[in-house]
Length: 285
Image (cartoon, rainbow, N blue to C red; front, side, top):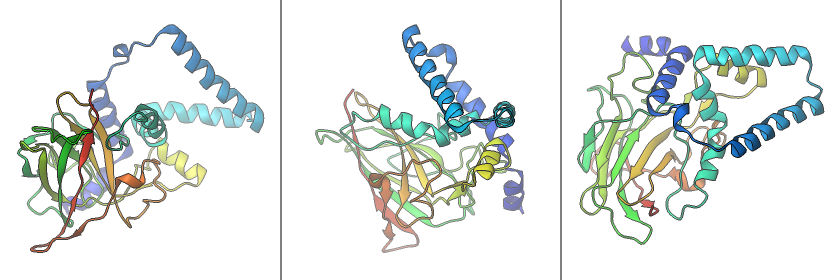
């Protein structure tokens, strides 16, 4: 009964409001200092691109007004974090990480929450006693680009449950369900016990869902693990890891899948579930 209630009550408005509030606690527009010339260039080019689309495709007033109403509704629904993270962030991430020599990055997405519980090098993510899904052992090592193991590196992980819901963004889930910050040992090694997440649709009962329906797109993201990996003197990497053969790996609505980020877990020899080893290589600051 709890799962069905959670599923029915996990609305776009609720998720959007939570995502907006989480973002505001971490980032303020006043914290970003961009010089006038840069703002002028970027804003002008963005507006010119919009003008070009209008002229090339003969956009009508009905279409313009529909866009205007939709953009207002996105704000009222609190879905700007969802919209930007699904359809824009992958390009920003690509530019931000093009210099890296180490592990590949991916988008953060709208469902990150800072300060997840700190856990030892081998740990089980917080979860319900009856957590559904396939047990997964995710293990590996954090190293520098020169191969040096990074003692005490932190591996922050969060992901959806077997129903496709994130704690703190859907009702009925414990606060830190399937979220944790694992501190690697003196060789940079870690072992994280969790449950494999499910593919899920981004919320479709709000403004983003209206865009998806109007454009005839699908709303699915493949199953994935979110991670932030950091160590002193090194650049933090934010990434997502996917599962070989998983649904929508080839057509992720967020365009965030990269070949280097696809895991291939194998069955655990002496117990239920699957396991996979994935090492992180961090660039120096």
